[in-house]
Image 1 (spheres, rainbow, N blue to C red):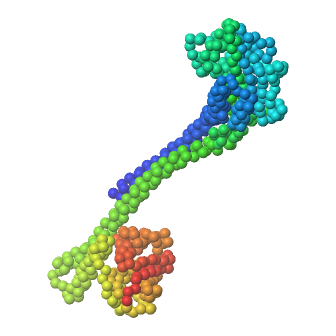
Image 2: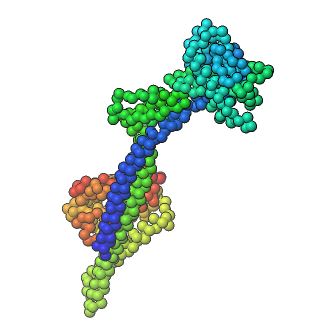
Image 3: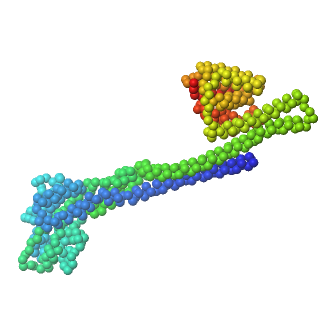
Length: 556
C-alpha cells in the first residue's frame, strides 16, 4: 500500500516538474516574442510617427496660411501703410518663420498703363507704392517705391505673375455661378519657394466688374483698390515640435538635397518633405540605435512584467499543488505509522494479557508466587493500555479546549519528590536528582504538570543508554516565571530534527524507535505547555544529552 502511494506521489511530482519546465520554456519564448514585437513596433513607429511630428510642427504655418492670410481681404483693398505695418508686425511676432513682408498698394482701372503694372484687355492692374516690413529692415527703407519710381524687376515680376493669374481667372469666370472659396483662394494666391504672394479677394460684384473691364471699355472709367502682400519665409525658423522625444533623438529642417556624410549603421534616420512654400526642405530625423533601444525596452518591460506575473502565478499554483501533495504524502505516512505503531502499542500488552490469562486458565492450580507474578503482569499491562488511552484522550481534549485549567497551590519540593519516587519504583536503575531555588510553592494544575513531568522523564529513560539513564531537574523562580530544566545524558537529538520533534505523530528514526513509538509524547508536552500559557524549548547535542526548558507563569 505504501509503495503504491509513493509511486503515485513520484508520478505527480514528475508531472509538476514537467509542468514547470514547460511553462518556463513558454515564458522564455514569450519574452523573446514580446521583445521582437516591441522592437518591430518601435521601428514602425519611427517611420509612422514622422507624420505626426510634421503635422504638429506645421500647425503655426497652417494657421498662418488658412486663417491669417484671409484677414487681408477684410480691408477690401483699402489697406494703408500704417495698417499694413500693424498687420505685418503682428505676423512677425506670432509667426517666427515670416522673415519679411512686402505690401503692394495697387489699383485696378479700365485704362491701359505704361509702367509698374500689367494690361489685360481693357483692364489694367498697377502699383502705386511698395512698402517693406521686417525685423532686419531699417526704418528708412520701409517704403521701397512710389508710383513715379522704377520698381525692382524682381518685385515687379512677383506682382505681374500673381496679377496675371488672378485676372486670367476673372476673364474665364462664369458669372452665373458663385465661385468657390477654394477656387478664389488658389487663384488670388501664388506659392513659390519660401514665398507666398496674396491678393485680397474682392466681392463677387467687383469680380464681375473686373470681367466687364477686361472685355470692354466702360463709360464710367471705374477705379478699384487692391492690396497684395508678399511674404518671405524662413524654413529654419520653423519650431520643431518633437512629439516623440524618446524616439527621435534629433529632428532638424534641412534642404531636400541634404545627404549626411555619416551613414553609420549605429544610427537610424528618416525624412519627410515639408510641402507648400517649404517643399525644397524636409524634416530629417536621426537617432542612435542605443537611444531607440531604450524606447524598445520601455515598451517591452511592461509586457515582460505581465508575462512574469502570469508565470509567477503558474509557478505558485504548481508549488501549492506540490506542497499539498507533499503534505498529503507526509500525512499519509504519519497516519500509516501512527496506526501501525498504535496497533503495536495496543497489541503488545493485549498479547501479554492474553498469554497470562491462558496460563491462568489452563493451570490446574497456581501457587501464591505464580498468582503474584500473573497479577503483576496483568496489572502492569493494563496500566500501559490505560496510560495510552488516557494520553490520546487528554491530547484530544486539550486540542479541542474541552478541559479546564485547574488552579491549586502545590509545594514544588513535595511535588518533584513524589514524581521521582514513582519513576524510581517503576525503573529502579533510573538515577534522578533535583534542586529548587527562589520559591517553594506556586499555583498551577498539578495533574497537567504531572503529565508533563511523566512524559519528559519517560522520554529521558527511553532514549538513554543503559549506563547513562539519569536526569537532573532544576526548578527556579526567574523574573516572575517558573523555569524547569530537564537535563539528561541520552543519545541527543540531531540539529536537523529539532524543529520536528514537537510535531504530532513525528518520530525520529533511530535504534531506540525500532520497537515502535506513536509520536505523541513531545507533541503532548507542547500542547500541555501551551494550554498552561507557557513555552517549551530544547537544546541538544548528539551522544551527549538533551535539555528541555519549560517556562510557566508564576502565580503565588
